Amino acid sequence: MNRRNWLKSGALAIAGATVPDFWRPAEAAEVGLPHLAGMAVKARLNKNENPYGPSQKAQKAIADAVSSGWMYQHEAAMAFRKMIAKENGVTEAHVMLGAGSGELLMASGIYYTIKGGSGTNIVGGDPTYMQLLRAASDLGNTFKKVPVTKDFTYDFNGMAAAVDSKTSLVYLCNPNNPTGVLEDASKMSAFCEDMAKKKPLFIDEAYIDYAADPKASSMMELVRKGHNVLIARTFSKVHGFAGLRIGYLIGQPETLREINKYCTGGGSISATSMKGAIASYLDEDFITYSKAKCKESKEYLYKVLKDKGYEYLPSSSNFVLFPLKSDGKSFVEKMAQKGVAIRNWEFAGQHWCRVSMGTLDEMKAFGEAFDTLA
Ligand SMILES: Cc1ncc(COP(=O)(O)O)c(C=O)c1O
Image (cartoon, rainbow, N blue to C red; front, side):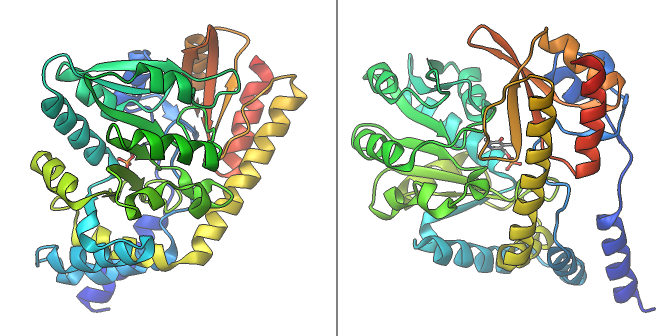
């Protein structure tokens, strides 16, 4: 076997293998249980990853790209941006790449905090995904939280009322993390279209691929209409690229140029990951398969919860949130002892558990552990 083929077969074998898993110190700290660090995990249901990815086609494209890895990533970035732009009906200048969407969220949080100056705030729902908001808060920005309604959707009237002259941005994650709730597209679009005339909007669509009709649920049309709206997307979820780090931001070119001052704008993504992402983007069969496996795991979990007399929030994403009947932190601890990693939340005077969709075997491991604790 020549060196090139050896590299290819090696890369495929590694990418397809199950890796022994354990609680990383950062994951243990995230749930406020640092002593879990190093503990073995048999069902990894705490990070909203896709255990079926990357697709075989993506793995092959990555392996094929290794031998030209001595060249910088520019050519791959141009091809990737072109494809994203075409697919979303915008120009390449409307697309900025990131090593995961997380760095684009953080750069945006930093940019709007500096732009907003002293006393500035960001308005968003509560609970929600905190990466942009934390980056902004660390620099002195205030997060004006507007609690979700009784049906766990955004309180758009409350948000409109919370916006003031010092608001630098409105952040909306849809479907929301940790609730998994997808907003009604017409209500969301009416709010966004009106709000975009007053304030910039950041819409985090990390989980939009899991919606029944992603295109109809997305707010991309607002960018195409010229509004100052940013849409963040990631390959970490339905494409199964969490460790390969691919994300992108779509918005008005002049806004992207400003945000690009606080990140590399794709310069930190490897050419191999981008070539894999191009192959994955075109691999519709794999996306259909990923969504079907996610649905199968969700239905299994819904049944486990129902059988035990638990409620849950019907989810449009690859995780499910359900209300606990006991303290969340000790529940996470007890499940960890049984090899199952999950996350807990506390809001609306209630403890909650968030379970990511793993393989059916992982869901069964959850079911068995839950059976002994519920
Ligand atoms: C809502 C949301 N946005 C963004 C991200 C960041 O993902 P990544 O940096 O892997 O693209 C996550 C990760 O879980 C998320 O849940």
